[in-house]
Image 1 (cartoon, rainbow, N blue to C red):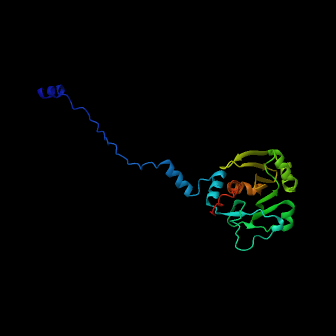
Image 2 (cartoon, rainbow, N blue to C red):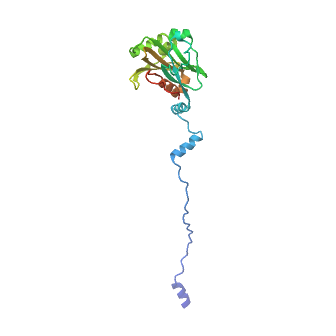
Image 3 (tube, rainbow, N blue to C red):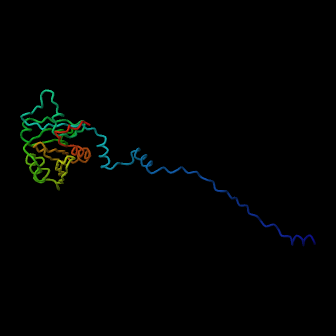
Length: 243
């Protein structure tokens, strides 16, 4: 009896539940790459396309150029200088030409009629070209609008381009010596042109860079560099060296 009473009064052990607790494990993550490095890797894989403007600037930076020395000789002196005289020493103007472009031989008749003195073209597309004309007997530039109209009188292609253009941009600038240049940009229906005009040595010089619109879109940076490279040579200073 006593044993039965003791068993009733003694607390029976409570059931226990075993819970398996696992401590969280640390996971090591690879460090994030800098954004610049990521973009560089993507570009290297050919997955990041350059914008047209960036691509054109890169093309201009990679292209090679040479300096052309123009003498603006009259038709009577067509054929160059004799003896040991060099075109560089006798240069009246200079401009850059892309390596690989070809020089077109200007005839004596052409030089005498419209004043074309030099011309280069892209052999892949002959209508993508750079050329210079000059006229004697000009001491100073006429008003900016009148100059372009007079240039177009002897250039049918320029007339057509101006007629088909939405507008013509014209600006004035002066170089380090104070010489005045007129600059024109013509975006025609089929072609794009950049023109720079100035007076020196009692002559009017007009430098043209022109290309069909597809070639303009592809080579704009190079063509603008050609346009900006034109300058007349001060008789008191040596012409710039070839690059």
